[in-house]
Image 1 (cartoon, rainbow, N blue to C red):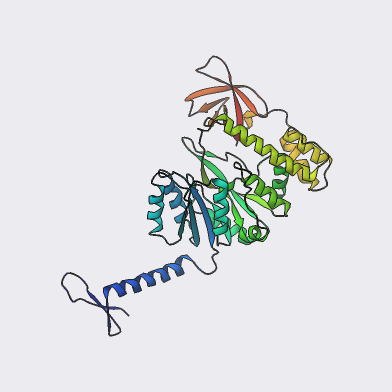
Image 2: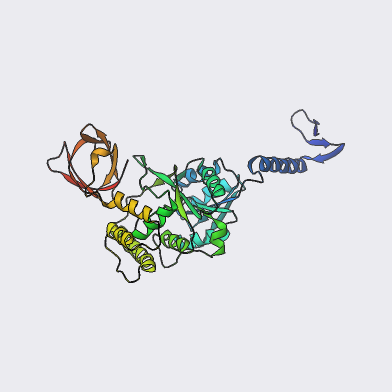
Length: 388
């Protein structure tokens, strides 16, 4: 029992504990330790696995607070947040230092010079101590139950190596399932082989034991889409990847990059996909469309469930055109340098909040829509991102 004796009318200057008098400084230390102990017992039960959250940041002073708070406020509290400051020139470091001063779970690493994404991702992997490793982009937001949902699934499914979640898009419009990713690990491997990205990196949680056992790191020769080669390595080592069918991550898409940037990404993607294809079909040139690849797998299948391959082929490749009337929402874009548009079905027309206009679909293919807006004289062609 702690007994406080008041030797002053205005402030406490002494604490009396079991007849021993100690000064205020020592008492403060004891109270701080007790707080940490009880906080630890409450937040970090022994059965709760440690999660290492890796965040890379560079000049994100305006956005990084929301990203940090979305992690610190997770329902799964047993975590370490490793923030790697890549030589920011704004006040990003001041902001993250302020958070670290009040939360011991934050570890800050500051590079003396800008090292780039791949270097920093590998540095984060090296520093991570958790049973599970996950990523948080400095401009995105994790839903408060993201870690809890993923940890629970990973604990109950020990064969899964990497687990993603579905995501929504941060911006002027909130779009759910911008990239529908693969919730069946058996389909995920086939999807990756034909050139469909089965999972989105910042949503993912990795099983640390698998990653460290096989010394998996990011390829320094891939400055963009660096995660593609990771999935290839994991699958080649008989690991399993899949997506939890819950929207637990808010992703911010930036539209300021030049077209050359996306062209470079496309080239790297194709190289990675070709390399993986050659592991399975070294004597067959890489087909130029996803459906041709899937058809080749269907007719020359030695590796996958034929039932699953047939089902994927029938779903994605047997329908010659896209039927817009079957969906309530469609997400479209003119090109990747511009923000996507959500169009919502309204009887036989579609309404766009962004366009502030009603459009009629004149024609469609499996990849494009021609829309005639009421305020325009000629139809405009859009690429289809996704639909629901």
